[in-house]
Amino acid sequence: MRLEAKLQPWAPRVLSLVRIVAGLIFMEHGTQKLLSFPPGPHAGPEAMSLIWWSGVIELVAGALIALGLFTRPAALIASGMCAVAYWTVHAPQSRFPVNNGGDAAILFCFLFLYLVFAGPGPWAADAARSRRR
Image 1 (cartoon, rainbow, N blue to C red):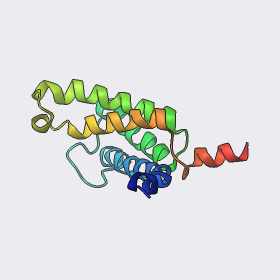
Image 2: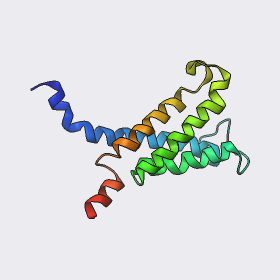
Image 3: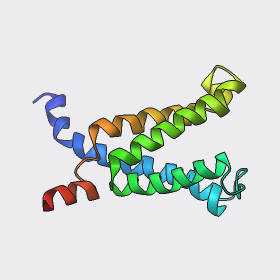
Image 4: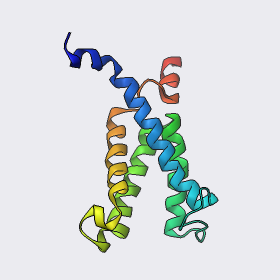
């Protein structure tokens, strides 16, 4: 049996694992900004500022993505926020992501865009809701 044939049945489960880990890490960016946990340079932004809104999106969308609840709309919003963050905050500093600190924003942007199309995988609240219908 070819390696590809052995790995293919695991693809949906690995999609779920990638979604969960990405959602938790994204959520951590929001908890750092809004809850000062873990402590970081952007903790406690002024309410309604752009960094505050990014923290809200990171916290809420990250939690929804990790749970696999409303995954596609949450991932679309998170992807768009990451694109805006890259082009407004990181890109003006340097055109090279490794130098401007925007590599995480780019990776999150495209990973979440992928989730919009791929869905949450089988280990998700969305999948459980679909099975109940």
